[in-house]
Length: 516
Image 1 (cartoon, one colour):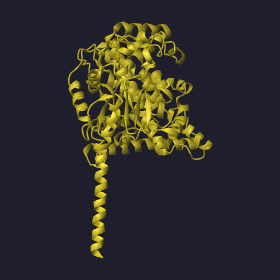
Image 2: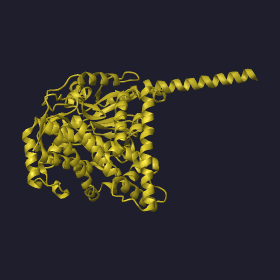
Image 3: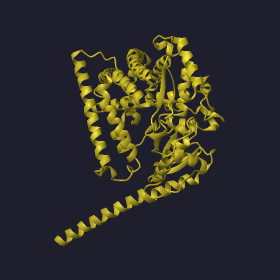
Image 4: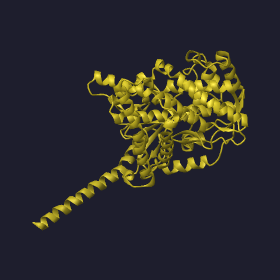
């Protein structure tokens, strides 16, 4: 009997080992080869598959090589520096070829630089295309409504929408102005001493203050810890993404994995404390609910009344708050930073914007209705978003066979919708594509380019929910800055856009301010 048990035990172990070997071979070799044949048979060009890591190492090498050298100070031709691998792929396969592919580990990633196909992918509601399962690092760092799909996304979006209505944002204008006043006061003291200012650092503090007050009703000091942790988390995630696709890597007790987990728990604890205090205030009737968290909890409560217990869980509210913190601080601070850098390079446009602001508001505080009359300021912000989009693109995954353009894509293929590439493509924007020319937006976004190739906030039903919030904040801040200061680049400024999840100035943004 014992010998039979040993025999069957050994046979079971052998079968398990064989199953594991087959699964590994399928993941590392057979499936990638099959997907590559399907893509090439339909005329797509791309790199040859290299086992397990694909092109990840080469992407890292080329990016590091590009990031090691600054650009000419007044050049906006940033695409080759920011994503060098994509730029070389476009050169290799022909700039007229808007669809190519490369390898993220064992998965083929199709690079889409065609606006029509981009819109088709973003508009897909039939389940063939979706966000895919978030990378475990991204899941620890950021999730929320931006990563959800289907009914879950629809529920989250519906509950969040009331907090971002323009009328609700209008009520937050005093908080915006209060934060702007503090920034202006600090810069006036700096200008009086003749010291240059790294505006990226100060604008991160400013947008952090704005999101803390408008989203959570607390000042920036109370939210500072979350922002510091988010910055550290972004760097850790960016450094480790190239290895995270390796099976089992997330279970290794590496320094980065351990720290990412610790930050995740610390941020969650801070936000849970804020949320529970607010819920207690709501129960006692002492909460004003005039900030985003209050509006979100109120909307969630209403959803529960209408749909039984089908609202957001406490953990889901935490994830949405984390998304608010990141998106509310990082993307808007970068838009304002690149705007000040670009207007420092183009003094004529800086003066045009200032004259418009003075014509509409004089030296008075900007008003909600008056901001809608700022055509030049709006054109400038759009042109900065074109040249320096915070998000370089959007990733999607094919779940079911789908036809996009002339190509049928099987399940398992990744899409990368290359916003930066489309924003810098002369086929869509003309020969002056690398020039700062806000006039191209004089007749609105839809007529600014061929095929309407402008995607800083995404497109379709999943357009960024915080779009109006970000533009309102950016317009208001820029108005107050232009009312109080003229500015130019410091001689120490190094023009070096690079990517740490979003498009950042690698060496900061030192600027000289002069009070008006």
